[in-house]
Image 1: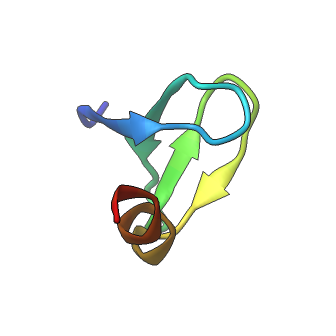
Image 2 (image 1 turned 90 degrees about the vertical axis):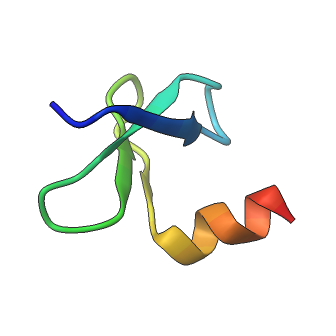
Length: 42
């Protein structure tokens, strides 16, 4: 499994790269695009 990247905005758990692109929280199944994470970092 790819290394974790960032934190989920809903539950705070780590995000992991998803095979279809973007990132997914394995705890609550939230999905994020790379754009979502760039906005979060700004």
